Length: 360
Image (cartoon, rainbow, N blue to C red):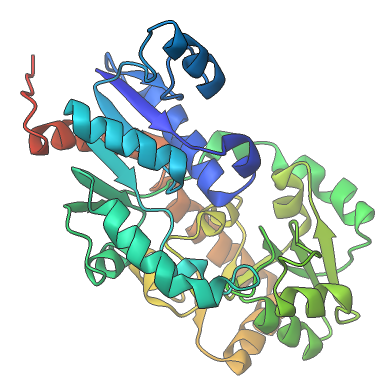
């Protein structure tokens, strides 16, 4: 079976959560013991420019594949979806984007979220099968409603990509002048990810806080991002881009992620894989995957966040216990599980599309 695993704008999304999830899909599929062949471009010749040139000579615009799997929702993915429907190719659309997690990301994103929701309802409903990272996201999509079968598949975590992170602790702490117990976050700086909570929490404690990840300063940046990154609390460091995410997980001690909306939170699994104790906002998607007091601490209020991070800062044994349990949770989301689930999904998509599926 030849499968298209497509991420439009891939070069621009290299360090995004969607980019990481897509790379992990491909790594997982490569490790599955099957005759599956994965291609990453829908265009004949490997790119749109080459395909367009070939089209003039009478060659087909699209490459040949047995299942189309798209990871984004833009015009390239729409073109693939339309081609798949015309040609009877089973279509899998991966719902990494919802109107809920688009809000509070960029300037104007909250106002645009309702319109995006209507578009996503139309786009995802074209699929033979919709994949999403969590049961929470499945329920969210069903509420739109998306008129297609929906199956949750964990984004997983690439344990090998984090190997050797410990060796980067001192270099990264020196680079950003970090000392003592450091409360930290990793990823793009958005208000949706709990930026204001993170900074106000820092103001209420004597601990060092660091957010490892890029942030916008131009007109597309939200008011909250401009405010906090332009004039941060004295004990908060915004590092900007980091070339090796392992350094971020090495430098920090308590991972604090007060996100308001997530479809899974891949960065949480990465922190867990590094054995870090994690403090999370008490939202449904985190309760779906994690257990308060065992592999994380879930907090509903700023006072609870403060109590949690100060407790962990004062108790290295508790940090160690939560971190060890978190590492075990992360191992349950290894890429072997992702590869098997994707292969099953492709077979199911073919069945739903009415394509004969044979098994040996």
